[in-house]
Each structure stands twice: as structure tokens, then as C-alpha cells.
Length: 191
Ligand code: IMP
Image 1 (cartoon, rainbow, N blue to C red):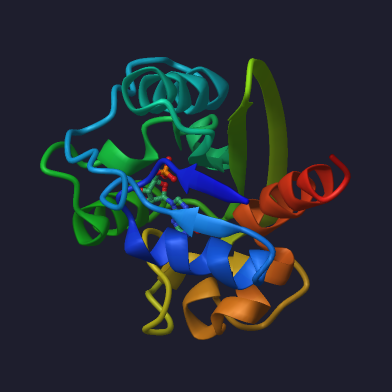
Image 2: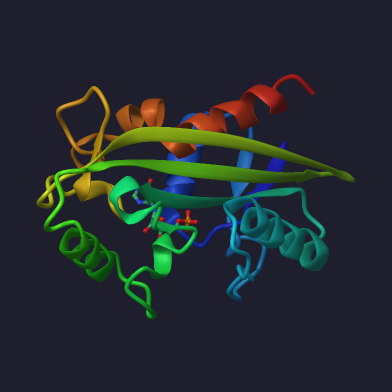
């Protein structure tokens, strides 16, 4: 079954392909010829995920899913949340986002945070939603060289290594997107 993952992030495609195995052919936006930036103007993860998936379905007539993820930090009243990608402004930069996050948390010992992912799936005429959450805490310095985004400063709850120190298989087992993708796969394998 061929399905488009509406993202331009090759690391995410790689993560989802690893989690899905061979049962689905995942194609990227580039693969379907969608080179434009997808609209993402909502103030919730759910709004943005459906907005992106609907854009792709309407313009390219393919079954597709889109995800939207946010990092909710308790000491920052849930920020950066839906604005995680643009936390330090445009152009988006993981490095500057992490710098700003660490600066804003400099004087607090409250480090708890969570990643949340919403996946919006458009299949035929139907819409479905899947969610995943990973609890953890924000480290004081970057640790590890893998992953992307805030991975070097996110220590998942119950583990002694950051997401950036884990390989893809390990991260997928416990990550927000891994959990949301598992829900998606479990749904897809029962239809
Ligand atoms: P998106 O909605 O998936 O593009 O995620 C928005 C932002 O959240 C990204 O630009 C990253 O900064 C961050 N993010 C999303 N997923 C992850 C992850 O698995 N690890 C670390 N940061 C992430």
C-alpha cells in the first residue's frame, strides 16, 4: 500500500520507514512532486496536522498522513508547544531553538517536559487521528550527536541517555512519534 508521509524532513521519513517495515511504501512530499512549504497556521498540533494532510490530499490526490509535534515544558507553561520548530524565530534552526530553551530554563530546577505528536491520516474519504506522548526532562547541556530538533537536550523518563544518544530503533520504541506511528500502523494493519 502506497501512502505519502507529508513531510520534508528526511530523518522523520527514515524513522517512520524503520517503524513500518516493508508492509507499506512510504513516499515523501518530494517523491510526489510537492516542493512547496505546507500551510501550518493553526494554534494546535491537531489543526496543523490536518491542515498539512488536507493540503496534500487536495493538491496531489494521494492518501497521506501528516504529523505535528510540540515540546511542552512545564516551567515555561507548556511552551514552545505548537511553535517548537520556530521557537527562536525564522529561519528555523535547531541550534538556536536549543540555545533559547536552555537560556529560558537557566534559573529553574523544574525540568519536566514532554513531546506530543498528532498524526492526521486521510484515507479515501475518511479522517483519522493518532497521538503519542513521551515524558522526560530537559538536560542542562547538549548530550549526544544523533537525532534532530531538541533530541540532544531531551532525557526520556526512566532512561539515562538522551534521545540524541539512542539509535533509531531505540528512540522509536519510546518516542512520541514512534507511539503515534504504532497507533497508525495498528490501525492500517486492521483495515
Ligand atoms: P514537527 O511538527 O514534527 O515539524 O515538529 C516541530 C518541531 O519540534 C521540530 O522542528 C523540532 O524542533 C521538534 N521536534 C519534533 N519531533 C522531534 C523529535 O523527535 N525530537 C526532537 N525534536 C523534535
